[in-house]
Image (cartoon, rainbow, N blue to C red; front, side):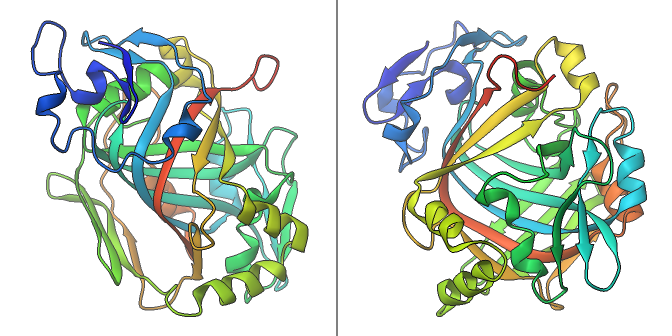
Length: 349
């Protein structure tokens, strides 16, 4: 079942979780499936989709898309050498943040995504991505001071830079269906072993707890600090690190793009490309993307749990520990939509 609905968008078996031959795809049973509201529906209609089928028999689309999700991102710095070693076989290199105190650091982001409705249903998705370049090691993406770092690390959203994209190092997922879809359709390095996860998006705090059984992968919480005056503080911070024109264009645009690079072994295993473009719909509300500095009473712990993937050797929590990940900023997207498509022909590798 692959069809367009004027209110709910693309309807696929993988979205509703039905296997071929099963009943239950009628609209009367939808209730919270798909989730409401559907976000950015008219915006999503501009992108083409291609029908495909998963190895479990579910009809689907080859492009990943989400009709409704919220996201909290923790951006920070890492020691350069462990990150370079982790990317040694990937043909990419971490770009550098030069800090005024003399440090040269890599940059990474943890994405905590509450996917409420997507091409492969509802699930929790946690991503570790690294800012990378294909042009060789040591390319400087930003020069900043510790005080301005929370705003400077947002640079990739505001136009061209030394960063060619986000290398997706590790993903932890609580849905076997999402794991199958991600690995087979677009080479997302979703760990084959599902996690037990709690993502709690509360009014004043965001909490997260990822485990394999009793073994901690990631655990912590972030106080939401945008509040009254948040937009003014964010604007002043960004204008100290970005040009007025770049900030204005970002605020006025309903969406922004994120180039994505997948691990070579995952792409080879499933015979799919490595390079994709993520399009994120945020709307034009000034508070659609909220940024504030990480503070001492925020908490992030990476546990020692590791499990083999049988393909790429990616356990991102170990890399966070080895590279002394230092959070500096929090970014919140309260309500968004997204689509990931393959890079145009001739781009990427």
